[in-house]
Amino acid sequence: MATVTATGTSLQGIYVVALVNGAVYFRRSGGWTDQPTPLVTVQAPAVASVDVLRNMDTREFPAGSALYVGFGTSVEDLLARGQFALVRRY
Image 1 (cartoon, one colour):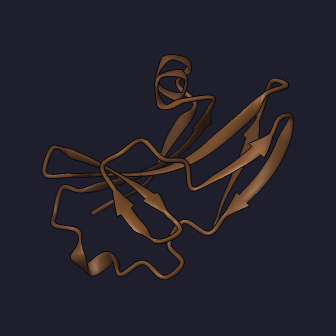
Image 2: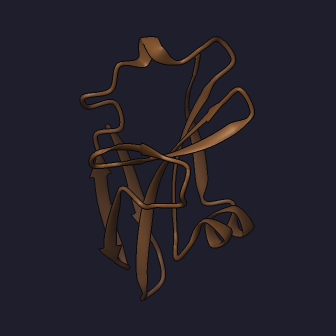
């Protein structure tokens, strides 16, 4: 479970991102996509808990993969403001 505190006053996407063999994948309710897609969206300011590993078979991640969680109005905002954290390295 990851708890994210979204700051500001706008809609914020909470992103769960896997970095696998140099490729980036975004978690969504139906699985993974290579399109920047938030797992959930909240109206900031807000505190949201996200079950990052729910229904996820982590055995499929090769060694060296990494899982991140973060928030922002977009992926660019998330990266520019450093609003993400490493959850687990495989």
